[in-house]
Image (tube, rainbow, N blue to C red; front, top):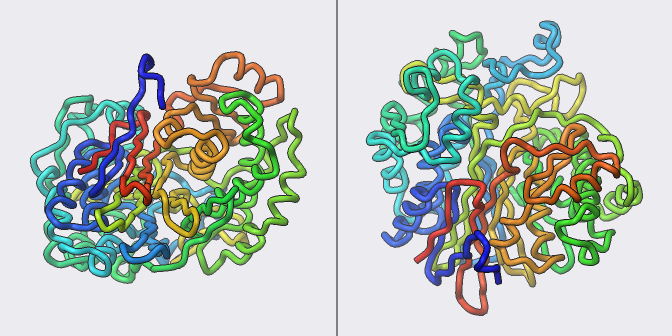
Length: 526
């Protein structure tokens, strides 16, 4: 139980259905969808697409998604890969010949084909209850009439507005300046696109006038994208990956997502006596940082397009975790084994929904960097993701950029199982931080007995590209101790990540929602 003398947030309890998101309006719409007879899939799609209007710097219909789904009548989890592919014309060699060592973040070369809309259409058709038209109706309404900008969204908008280029400045700025808290953001062009999807399905997006707008816009900027690239977009149902941690099963999305990184990191930490440590002390943060460096190094070596990821079994093996754990010095920081293959970003939305029949959805949806590539289509204002920046340009590497390939993805939805049952869909936004965030959240509960809301509220740290980001929730004494161990400690400008979770208490028949105060959202139930 939290100390009610101190600022904080209570968990939310409900018995029928619940949604936890990073924006209150999206949570409200999801619960309304459940109350109207929809299931968790219908509600999750409604909330996700609306978040593209509430938080356009973080996500949108020009992006990708990954989903973990637990059906109502089973504890077996289904994974859906809604990540798009590079256009057929993308050439790593051409980029290398042009003097590039990485994919240029704000260029059409970084723009992969949006995969989320195809995934939402497929998810609704295969698992939804009341239809795609019902799920898209709230987003259409709010895109047309507008949404007041929330405080955290305003903070992110102001910090990243300079990334917007060309037509995107017209659609996502207010007379050339970032929108501030309380100003109304409208996206009538996206409302029209969503209306077409609601009546025509995926063809309303990947073919016809909308696709032509995206392709013509990208080609005018020098992109190799074609109508055939868009028409060929297809999501894939697949099997999740998982690993054991002290009686719990951590379930993650498989490659090209980086979920295996969280499993490896948790297995490395299982070789240390975390419960004997101060949960908010330097020693725990140090061990976590070292485990992250090693797990992320493995990620950078192995995770790529599913067809190119050939060492997954090795990465998830207990023996691999044991050998890596032996490399950690409990008193001294190691150098980063290798630079991360993508630059730092913190813009994504995650949401989770559980309905009265205990169907559970864990969904993450992103345009990668803030405002993605910073580019948008000329007519409808669709903001293009720059997920292609997740590729590298190393010749022969599994994650080398190439036409038709999916890049290594940072976004990962998660679920926890115990005793064979799903007990919690959860996720932690924040780009590269996400595997570390999954492990921090889980170990906060498993090793230190924190309630889900307290596990989310607790301070975070993350070693990234040679710098250890330590939130202000830690004391100066802890920061100094970490610096003495050899970490280059800084206080990040923005808080690390943003989490959402729903605990399914099977015995009590109750849902317990938790939502991160680092974002604007909340958990709501009925």
